[in-house]
Image: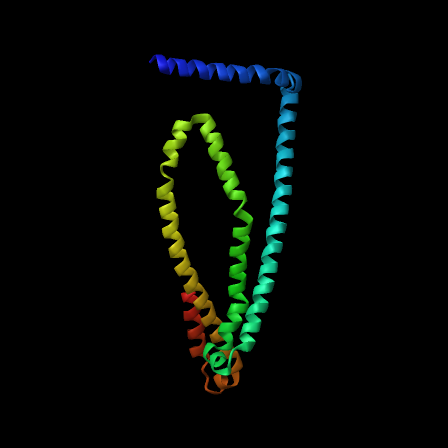
Length: 211
């Protein structure tokens, strides 16, 4: 009990020193009446939002530029690789599948890269700042909450694997939609000659439903 009381006394003394240091600044800069205090608070909020918006703009611009340059190189590499493929491989793959790789798959990859580049620095810094603030307020409660982090990591890992499989199926389904569209539009004369419009509609309907 004496040790606990001594710790409380030290904490109170530390808080008192902080208050004594902050008192002159508060007395000097904080308004005395309610109206000026409201104006000051609103001004600080607007300033904070403006600074946040400015940094968000630079973050989006820089991450978007990096993403588009990466996609530029990747598209050119994929195009060079496609032109080097032999005819048998091109026939087996099909132009619809290759078109999906150049369009939809690239856009999906660009979204992932932009999210990764945009948040790989920002989110850890935000997390560290929040943890530091929480420890400053109550380090015991923060440790209790941090004990749940392994459970959260496990759940995120499971969800990530599920999303990976779902994304793979989604990309394959989009490739099938491209293939059905290409076959139906390139062979539109045959489709009309044999009145196969209902068959083509069913194929397209079923594949978009799967998608």
